[in-house]
Amino acid sequence: MVLPLLYGIGAKDYLEPRGFMVLTCQRCRNTGPFAAFDAKRKVTLYSIPTVSFRDQLVLECRSCLQRFAVPAEMRQQFVEQLLTEAELLNRLKSMGVALNASTGGETKRTFYQVLQVDPAAEPEVIDAAFRRLARKYHPDTSTEPDAAARMRDILEAKDILADPDRRLRYDRSIGIARRPAGIRPEDI
Image (cartoon, rainbow, N blue to C red; front, top):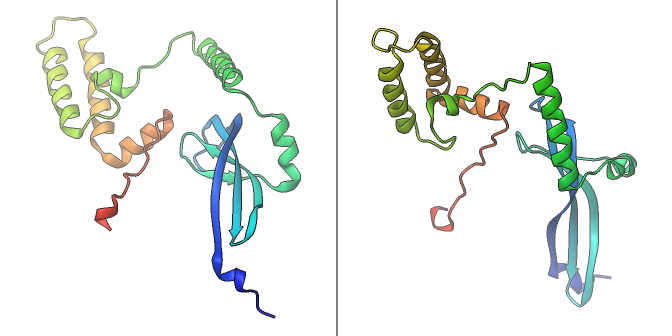
């Protein structure tokens, strides 16, 4: 017997936010926040009500945006460890305090801060910032006592940020995840 309803199947996937966790990513090896989602698939057949077909817990690394499915037998263990956004912020602040205490309270400036540019800056902006700061802090022309050290920092920042591959790796290491550009319908 053939059911005429089967050719009218529609399915839709949903991601519903559940909370956050602090874990080490299996892919990028960074320890940081993960967002937890319930991944659901709902199936609709014509003349039959919509039913939930799949319900799975998914964790997403906020550094590399890789998603990991939690096995069904471990779901309850992960759900018990979920944090709210406020709890996550407190956890990250305490981790930051512990990190600062271990490094003597000093935080290292990012290469973007060294060059005084925005993390989304274009390569031309980075080159212009480098030239401006190089003129100001070059050891031969500057009268500041720490000009040589500043110039070394500026050169290192420019070397990393000028190379797209090294910049991408650096961005991931400090927690900046670049999403791929979207495709417009007219480009297809």
